[in-house]
Amino acid sequence: MTSLAATAGATVVQTVIQSRQAADPATLIGSGKVQEIRGVVEGFEIDTVIFDHDLTPTQQRNLEKALAVKVLDRTQLILDIFASRARTREGQLQVELAQMNYLLPRLAGRGVQMSRLGGGIGTRGPGETQLETDRRKIYRRIRKIEEELEAVKAGRAIQRRQREEVPLSTLALVGYTNAGKSTLFNRLTGAGVVADARLFATLDPTVRKLQLPSRRQVLLSDTVGFIRNLPTPLVKAFRATLEEVRQAAVLLHVIDISSPLAAEHTEQVLEVLREIESDTSPRILVLNKADLLPGGLVQTETAAARLLGERAEAAKARAAAISARTGDGIPRLLELIDEVLAGEKTSPCRFRIPAGDGAAINLVHERAQVREVVYKEEYCLLTADAPESLRRRLSEFVVE
Image 1 (cartoon, rainbow, N blue to C red):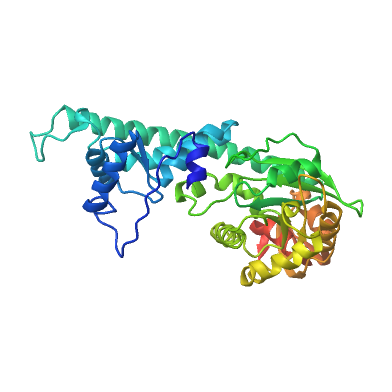
Image 2 (image 1 turned 90 degrees about the vertical axis):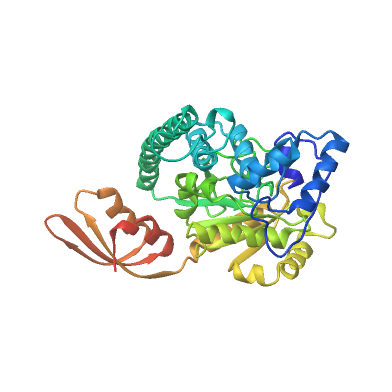
């Protein structure tokens, strides 16, 4: 949480920790803790209090009234960081949509201009009118953003189909924020993606071509970093972006192996992958920042297996220890990618594809072992042994 606050531009003056069996409905933390925090606020002249927890609108209002300073919760803080990081139009729209959905239930009770004068016919005053006006504005803006995002999604789908016309497998970099994904992306592709120690330095996906030792060419996609308790509105807003992860033939799960929280971060990433239904994709554990640990890369890889324990087994992935900063271990990683792509499991599958969709039909012939082809008037029925990545890519044509 301290890193999140620092990323947002705040200076952490004091940290207060509380453990209780149940949250207080009014303030989350209870009246006694509120008084303790008020003392800290007054003693250090603090102007903002940040909670590493989601607050209900009522809790946030009560806390701001009791502490007499601005109060932010975890979701609001992450939304602020995302807003400052988004560079493309798509990223800005996704962040704004999440902000609008977050703001909507928090309109009531904000300031005198929105105060309710009473209930029932004839008792509505200008405050209630203003509240309803604001709600209508937000609802209209949400609909407008969703329409624009659908257009962006359609455009991304067209780009994806154009890439699919050239039968290249797609790899996606995933991992906890600040694990070194963008540094690795730049190392592998020579791209100029921003890579620094800030959280969520990359929000907008970037795709570049990569050549493997076998001379096979693939597409590599850099994606947004995950984090513990990633707010649900953000997961939903960035679903179009995360389609790059769902369509990938192999996921490169980048882990900061030098972090004492490596095992916990790994589990958090797997949880997000489950949310977006990508937890069954083939994965390679990329144990990054191995140069910060004593011993060679082989020892680091062995130590990582012990460190990650059951989580490494649950990931169902091979592992490669590397340093994206120095380039150590990169040749071994590329060889491993080649091995995983070459050994991708296949299973019997039937595709029913419109006869006019030559790109999809050609993709099946390129990526699968076709057993039978039957042409009808309006569609082509193909029976083939297909890899899982192809089944996901052409899921709309799969016949169960």
